[in-house]
Image (cartoon, rainbow over all chains, first blue to last red):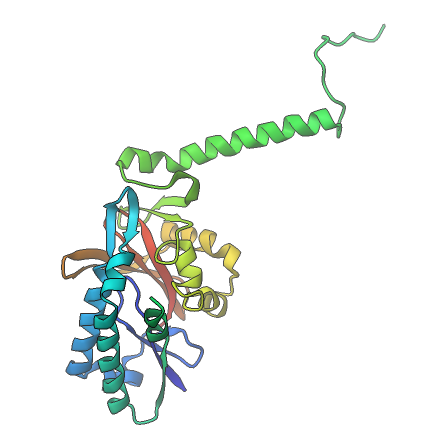
Length: 110
Length: 162
């Protein structure tokens, strides 16, 4: 069964459309219900923008610096968005994909 | 004809401790020179970098200098392999998709990024932040996707099935 993973990554949507081996799969047909849903994609974009906001380049004497303090401050906002994302995914999922949330447990521990 | 006297300079015989030490010193010096040559483009570009953590520096077909450091939970090799929660990395994805173990990932990425054809190169603007999503051809079934800072620092990389 195909998998949709929820995971934050630099310059990537929190939604990872994966094959049964868990590897990201560039096959829109398999995930069209999710890709074409504007509400889901809008929530995903908000999460992506929020997560990307933590990355700074040539900052703090580092080539790439991650603002861990800001991430902690935004914890509740991120959790709320992730919940919205999952609710929408579950609404759209007719049992054809497994949904694997890797991000919420990580954020909860911040 | 008598035997020629040696110059008086002490040399170890083959396999001796003295020769081993000399060889070791020479190898260290060569590695130091190679390392300095490797980071020279970073110095010339005036970017910030962590010298002892640099794994490779290269120029890909976009013309941008890119480099990989050992990194941490959020960026660089450590992030690529293990993610920011030790279970969220792409170590297993590289094994399954590309047949390479984690110790080979830096060399693999260097080769793909140096020699690989760029399939797409998008400067993504997210709010006030910018970064490149650059996709390299790998083999028939997979491509390698990278997230690169505007300074060339490689934040992330992972295989994607076509």
